[in-house]
Image 1 (cartoon, helix red, strand yellow):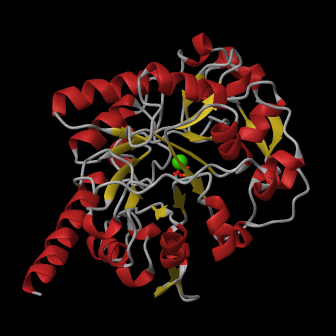
Image 2 (cartoon, protein in one colour):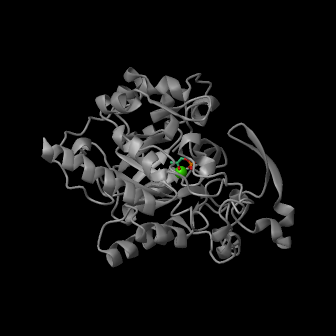
Image 3 (cartoon, protein in one colour):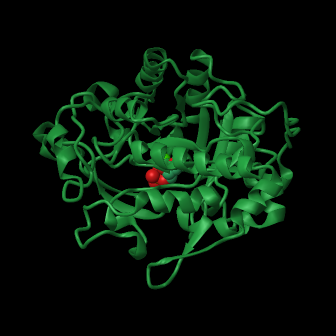
Length: 386
Ligand code: G3P
Ligand code: CA
């Protein structure tokens, strides 16, 4: 796509999609994203395996995705960046020293560089400086070795997968497990890669097309923290699969910053902006604290208006990221003092489900699955009791 312009980034100026008419309620169907066809109150919330089953395996490896599906994830989540030769590969960021053994590889020592990505200066090794063949010689390592020590036994065991390999694995797992496993690729650093001539959006649409996933409700969903690419995916690039705008409680989309647009994420979440957004995407992916606030003392606070406002605008809501370790939990949901021990994550999931979310990203899909089943059983039991 490109070059991008301020006008292209402005929702009001962009070509508006005709909202899809709501159709009959789907069954609670694993892997089918809660897009415009979804009726939240009747369905079971989706469990999205965040970077696979990243509480238990090095993130973004085929082993992590496979485990996620086996543990009950409805959807697996690959984050996408580009190689030097334009291949979509799966990493949370393009700087890969935290999740691969690149720093231990003398043959790549001279690739170490300092760059500014989305306004942040980083020193390390970057996927855009490696061909796919070079990247394939690296091995994945656990990002959080202190916290997730058990996962470190897999350090060095797995490659960095391509997006294509993840889509193949999704198909294989769907057949073996006899249920559709969804896939929700996130395009990382869209504006940055575009500036290098390594735009990723076209490749994402092409891959979904080739795997017969480029249609609403296919189980494939495209996400981004940027807005311009999501609008262009719909209006120019032929994306028909569902899509999600990711947000955070602070900051602004990198594309808007690059274009001098002063809007922050918070400005894009007021009701009128949500209605505009719903013309272009199916869902919001906010951070958990945008759905249920955190108090200053670290305890869990009150529900915000976001789920209700988003639903009123026609958007479903799937927040990130439910993690089981104490380190990531509100202080009143921790058990014991060890940051690596698991806390009351089932109870915390219940809070979000009761807040009305349509799914949740989690590093521990087994716990998300148990929490979801418990929530649905209680909700449906209460409905039957009248
Ligand atoms: O895509 C949902 C969630 O993964 C966004 O956060 O930083 O883990 O990609 P991040
Ligand atoms: Ca992600």
